[in-house]
Length: 252
Ligand code: 13P
Image (tube, rainbow, N blue to C red; front, side, top):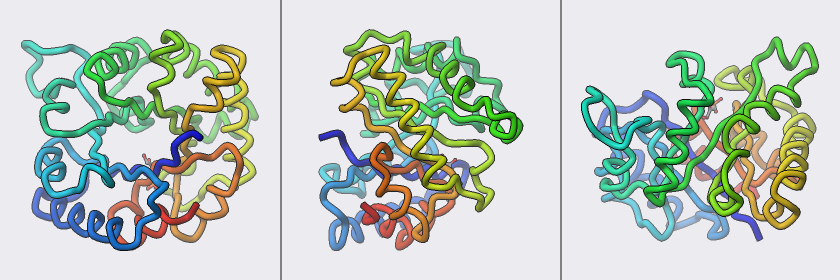
């Protein structure tokens, strides 16, 4: 009943022309051979959003920003507001990616503002969480992720929480080729779903799409997506190659 989602996160890659070409390729492959059950999302740089939205079939491929401003508008040089994102045709916003938390010092307080603005504009946040290697090695990853959620999206009303997609991305698995095992990913996603049961109830937990991200590839996607609590993936490197991305879209 909950959505299966495969979202690409292109990060800071592709020029505009490269991005349009990639989006066209993905759009065509999805139209020809894509699993119709999978919601496909392309997370492009801000500069590409409108152009990518214009070349994909919105019934099959949705477009996402990778961040948004923490303020609705005004004198914030260089920032891109949620209203601007929405005006491009994008319908999702990736928020709280570990790269933004680490390199741009995004805190829970900042993320709460971004989540609220995204929801108020009618866009869907893909809210990222996940622990660093030291935390995994210390065995305290569950408590860490729980705190990330409790300080942010668990503070939402049940109605707003129902609009969120969660992505668990262990930092040690991002871009490293060292994916979490399907068992490690399943354990964490089941833990997160259990927290949602306790906070918002069984129905909310059953309806919430929770994605795994971190070195997800055509080689491991099927094994990961066969786990009961893994509802799809947030894909970095492999989303830059249309055929690889399609293989992941079709890995359910
Ligand atoms: P990789 O798939 O390149 O490991 O990146 C994952 C990620 O950070 C997606 O947001």
